[in-house]
Image (cartoon, rainbow, N blue to C red):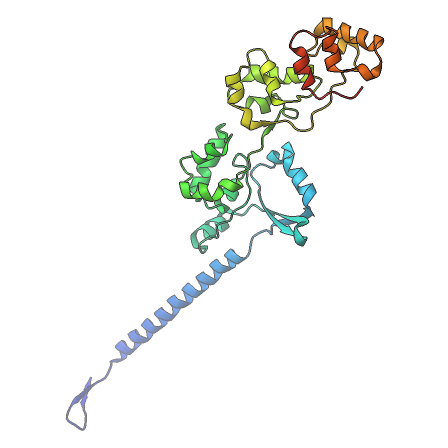
Length: 314
């Protein structure tokens, strides 16, 4: 519709249908913006709230370290834990993340802002997938590491973790100081623990356990492994950096009966009888491994091995 203005020019006016269309467009834009706002609000709500809260424990630092050294910690499986110092470092807050629904996990992964990469001590053989993600790995990379472990793979050394195809050089350089792979304790590990060492199968795992019993239930030094039949220097060098000895038990050389002494790999039947005679015919202050050797009680070379063992005082 047109009409003339006073200056002779024509003025255009919108028709009724055009006005309705324009109003509809305005409402459409407002509705779209409102929908985006509501969607964003819902996403932020999910991101800020959890369907179930995390569990937080605050325990003494010494007790926490004791618990984490126990073998049973591996039985905690795929749970995620976060550790932080509280109370001036005298206590540790342990946060256990709860399991969330797939819907919430999906929203978090899709809409969460750039995640904050964390750095903390971890055992690559036990840390759950969520923990790997917190360390900076993508969920796909974390799943690849977990899949390797589930198939029986183990990271025995830090260098093993570095060689994983999903661990980039930059990530490894950042995490290397925090990788904590516990050493195998020769006096605490069972046959399965020995079997996990490189070059040790079922045969040597059983032999290592049996030899420990013959020693009186405790290794005194790592090189004693080479006194096991067939356990040569090459095999020892391949795992010496992966083992340790904690709290060796003193051998009761001066109090055990003859039938127990003869089981010791450095004593045997002849020397066991000789030790009993030596104890019966010499004062206590002369009871030393050197004196046994001088008296010809021990076989050649056995005095040196026995003297390196931790022996209980007479």
